[in-house]
Length: 242
Ligand SMILES: C[S@@+](CC[C@H](N)C(=O)[O-])C[C@H]1O[C@@H](n2cnc3c(N)ncnc32)[C@H](O)[C@@H]1O
Image (cartoon, rainbow, N blue to C red):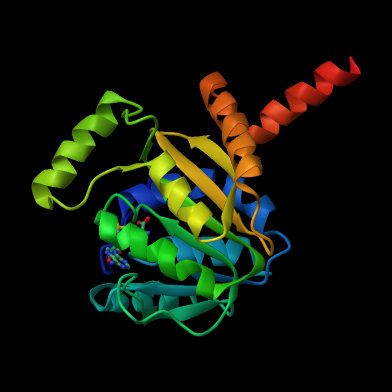
């Protein structure tokens, strides 16, 4: 498909290219959710596309102030009833809303942020989550301290040259921060172009450390085999009943 960038407003080629594959993963997860907060909405392209494709969701955009005019242009042109104008949200500042949501989504933001920003994200995110809410994070991650591809390693150098604080974050480090925030990893999807979608769920009750470690072993096994946790579960069930 030929893409005709609308040059009259900020445009992200990568958002255009990844929106369909992201939708395929997040749509079933969000089918029974009503409200979602997007952090670091960027141009607003994801917001209008996902809100249109998931009309049951009210999609709240947010970002640093400098992105707001672009987001508003995308929202005005789309004129959808279920996507809300951005509010100012810097994950490290006291600008988090008092509202609670059924899900939080953020794409391609953790590698732009410094480590302290990602720590602040996890320190604060629970406050805006309803019980059983989901946190969905799209982007590149490292595993066991290793880049998952040469292109990610080169991307990390490029990012750090631009801003020494930014860079691709370790999956295990993020997951430990999430666990501390009362979030449990539900799944880790391998995506095209060496990206992932990490999905955490806010548990009413904190899982005991032993259970968290068990889940992490299952996730590592799925990663080793290059499949998702649900695919691994399907395999195990098939073996049990064959
Ligand atoms: C690479 S863009 C990704 C935008 C969009 N989500 C996408 O996928 O195209 C990174 C975004 O992170 C936002 N950002 C950077 N630091 C942030 C912070 N401390 N708090 C919230 N957003 C931040 C930037 O304003 C920018 O919109």
